[in-house]
Structures are given as structure tokens and as C-alpha cells.
Length: 381
Image 1 (tube, rainbow, N blue to C red):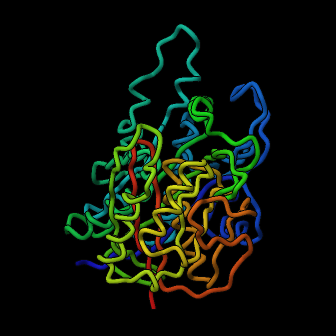
Image 2: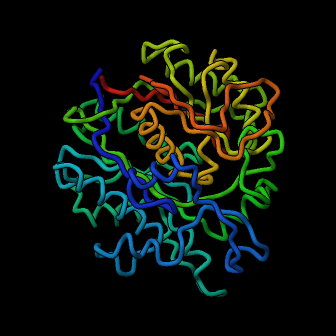
């Protein structure tokens, strides 16, 4: 099997426009989550990790993005930074492009005056992906991954498989989503939005906090100066419910086991697990059970939702990048918002920064429709 390396990465969001800026903020314990009071989003105040007014415009000032939506600007800013870090170009026939998102340009729906027909063509995910590909003069047609909240990690796994298969030598994998009234009202209809900043795995957790942002990784068959490589990954679907996760956690555990087995690793080899940890009652309970079924109950676990909120199609990418930086720096990021254990099968969660060297970590994600994914990330020696 072809070894695949992560040769560049980027995060754009409330905490900064580069991976370094974001990781430094997380190390300091700072969060992008804040109290939002904007009637365009909701009648009552809510907590969310949102870009400050003018922040995205500053990040994209150097790029030709006049007329672009916030979603498109996020992608341009993130992809541009990654391409500038290497000599690899999307104009190369051997370089692919994958875009991960759950809702894409859904903001156009609520920007359409009542009674007018919304620009349905511009809201198609592939239309936006093609626009981004054209922006970068990409030689190949983009691939769109939209698989609920596992989209970002599935996009990384898909990029790895395309390189493994010899289709490309390099793949740019980018994910983004924006926090909109549509998205917020959808989660509120499930009564799944916390009235306070989210508290993953905590006994007093009451739901998710939403966020927005973008992230990109550049995968390559060439190691160069890469600090990280990709292990195996796997995907499952428990078909339990359109929005509720499995009650047993066995299906998520299955992909955890597959990712470890196909990477040639045992649970004891994993330095930490970067869990999905949305802070909903059912998700965190399911994940705790899955960790036990997979033999990972004693391995350190964290959730990064307390720093970024749930960024949907960008979550798997953002959290994998922060976790790679944590592994490189010999730390385990604490779970912000966690104080009191609140799952029936205890897991090893910290709320303080831990100094620990790791050669491998496991990233897990779960989403609506019962989808689950897990993937191993390695620190190159």
C-alpha cells in the first residue's frame, strides 16, 4: 500500500487563519465560542463559534473573491494558504481536489427575498466545488463529499484511497461550513442546542454548540518534510435513526477496530483518541460505549468542540489538524467544558493539558443517518 503523507495544512476560523494561530489559541485554552445576539440568526441569544465582523474579509483581502459567498471565501482562504506552503499546484494533472461540506451555500436560501425563487443552481454543492476548482485553475474535476458530520474525515480517507489507487500523486482535501439561521434552526428543532457553551462528556451537558470554519490538508505520496502520515481508516453506518446514534456503540467500535487492525496497531499503541464529542446526551453516551467495545476505555480521550463548536463538514478536518499538532508537540489537549464524568461507561478524559508523547492517534466522527468513521494518524520518525 502506498504511504500517504500530510505535507501541508491550514485552519481558518474564529481563532485564526493559519494552523499555527489556531493551535496557539487552543494551547492557551481560548475558545472561538461566544454569546451571539443577532436577530438574523435567532430571536433569542445563543452560543456559537462565529467569525467576527470583518474577520473573513481581512483573511481574504489578498484574493480575488468579489461576489463570493462566506462559504466560498472560507475555502479560498484555506486552500490558498496550503498551496502557498508547497510547490504543488492544482493545475497539475496528478493533483486532485476534494471538497467536504454538509450545507455548502445554504446561506443563499435565507438571503433570498420572500416570494423570490432562490438561486437553486448556486446552492448545489457540486456547482460551488466547480467554482472553487476554476478559481485555482484545477486540472481535474473536484470530488464532493457530503456525508453529514463525518464528511471531513471521510474526505481525508477518500483522498488517501485515491492516492493508494494510483489515481493521483497529491490531493487537496478542503472542508468548510458556515453557521446560518437555517443550520441553527435545524438543530434547535431537535432541541439539541445547548443554552451554554457545550460540555462534552460532562454530566451536565445539554447539547451541541455550533461553529463555522474551514480546513485543508494536502496529501501526497511524496514525504518531503512531512511530519505526519495517514494510517488506515474505515466507515460504517448503523442505520439506527435519521438523527439519533446507535444505542450500543458497536458500529462505531467496529470502524475503530478496523482502523487499528489495518494500521497494524493495538489499542495500547494509540496515544489518544480525538472523539466526536458533540455534548449531546446520546452521542457522548454512544461514543463512550464504543470506546469500551474497541478496547480503548483507558486511552486518553478528548473532544475539541469546546474550542470550535461543531463545524459540521469541516469538523473532521479541523480536529484532525489540531490533533496532529498536539501529537507533534507531545501534548493532549484538554476537553474544554468537561468537569464531571457523565457517561455510563467511564472514559479517560482530562480537563487540563497533559504532557504525553504519542506516535499515533485515532480520530473518530459520527453523524446523522447513523454514519461513523475512524482513522489513524501517525507521527513520522
